[in-house]
Length: 445
Ligand code: URA
Ligand code: CA
Image (cartoon, rainbow, N blue to C red; front, side):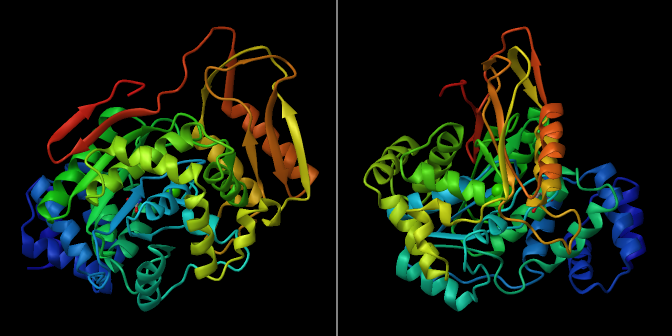
């Protein structure tokens, strides 16, 4: 079999067999096939799709293209959580300490920001001294000792995805359901957890902007998890506006601390509790996600969640005092508020553009080698459905200088539509997908 024959087969719409798919994943991992042939096959997959069987085989072959972490030394059911990416989405920093404080071990390998979306690793590095590059040994020991670790990938995890992801980014083949599903799940399956909770976003700031596509992606990933022998539950949640109010690395850490300290709430807390509830369920800690949510609320009220975050920060070399005094986090030179300057109702937000506005301020990378400025970003003061007046605050800008603040203000303004008609709040929950099927959620369920 030659690689050219595999490309030919997929080009004509055929179904690849196990040998062909394994060949593809290995070739991507060790780069034994030139990029142009890998890219041609990616485009053929993007255009002709894959069957569920092909997607499963590809996921498993990508998982096995590198190391698979062994967490069997840690007692209990280890749960992981992954989001398809959003703006102001700091659920991991809220729910990892909360579920750990409730006795569920959390083994979480997180990623960096990608495009307009933020990444947990970048947020953690906003905490002075924080180390995210643990060895597998250190990672396992920390979970044994304090029940939680949030780190970058240990070892050589799913190297096939590393190659394919970089190629997809520059060949217009990111938006393929089988390629997204295999990319996400191969890494999750390799990181060693026993069960996985996925947060599949839908809306203007999500990778999948239409609910049909988000549902399809969730169904594929839950199905692949089942065939791989790991329970996967997916929540479809809204990304038509930033999830939290804070966008930017240190600002998002501050919001997570405020939530754990019981000073803040809102949609970020709601989604964090829902995802955490499913983690508690999959870990066998509670019989329903609602019971898990109740336990997590108690962990906020008692301060146990914030104490767990402190322990985690200290264990990873960071300064735990930020939990008591968030002013110790990096702070921007210019902090000022911009007002709506218009009367009416907040109708819509281009959340991708809002993410890009933060990125342009220095909160994300425009090129691989860019250094992040942890202090910059903004705090949104409005949500979709709000009634606003001329002098209602729109956002608080945290910028390196006045010029950046002015540019960001213009970008935020352009991304938010204010009109005369009243408008409902943005939807937060859409559906849950489990091995048993799709459960559509009522808005406030
Ligand atoms: N996140 C990933 O890791 N891979 C994708 O393909 C999309 C989002
Ligand atoms: Ca995230």
